[in-house]
Amino acid sequence: MRLVRLEEELREETGAWGAPGTTLGFVPTMGALHRGHISLVQRARVECDRVVVSVFVNPTQFGPGEDLQRYPRNLERDCGLLESEGADLVFAPEPGTIYPEGFSTFVEVAGLTSGLCGASRPGHFRGVTTVCCVLFRMIEPDRSYFGEKDFQQLVVVRRMVSDLRLGTEIVACPTVREPDGLAMSSRNSYLSPEERRQAPLIHRGLSRAAEAAREGCTDLDEVKGCFMETVSEGGLLSVSYLEAVDPSTLESRSLSEGRPLRLLTAVYAGKTRLIDNVELVPPASLRRSRC
Ligand code: AMP
Image (cartoon, rainbow, N blue to C red; front, side, top):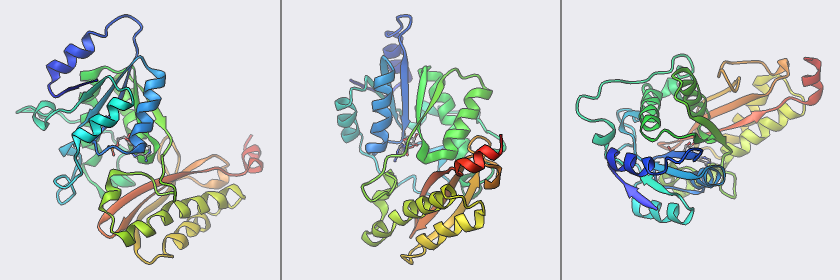
């Protein structure tokens, strides 16, 4: 496995893999790798001939007052993990490599980015889509692997790739969790012991909401109530948003239409913002009644 920092080194390395039919898988990350990231690398390893992982804490997706400076960084440890997972190449550019002097082009996906995390983090998705677009152009992957944990990001990036014909297939990978259900995240390291103790209530609440939907409850207020009740049990978590949306358009929808929805949430544990989501699947009787 090689670690490269410059665009020329990256292109030299990937250019040498150019035999026709060689498939390239790409896993973009901000580092501080955990089992969630590793699951993406493993999937890419199984499905592609070559695997490139980027480690880049992208400044343009952090708002003023967010955690850009203190975001955990440990490239040496990350490289050790990636080497043992069989990644071929790690691309860890400096900000100036991605955004050279004079850089002034940004990619913005309209509509899909206005609600949910986009509402509370203005400019966040513009930073995400811009860096992904630049990385896709540099690496030219056949497949790119994204986690369902960041569900809105997945939908937004997929839209950009389709609209701009960027020619990489976006592969969605399931959320990897701690044994107590908390979605793995580099930001979990910010949690105090008490916040960490209560954080699994997020997944527990989402699971209860999903269960209510599965049992035939079509009243979204009631379904959301299962979540709200659960997260309030600990007394420390505060909900930033909770919305049930169409999984492709991210538009609000009713469960009585009989189609699966995605329930997405962002929750504050102290100053730390945690996100998670679950699929809401109405019972088969409701689904059949649509046909
Ligand atoms: P990040 O380093 O947080 O930007 O994440 C890089 C990629 O890893 C994104 O596609 C995330 O959705 C994905 N990811 C982060 N946490 C998890 C998790 N717990 N399970 C699966 N994928 C994840």
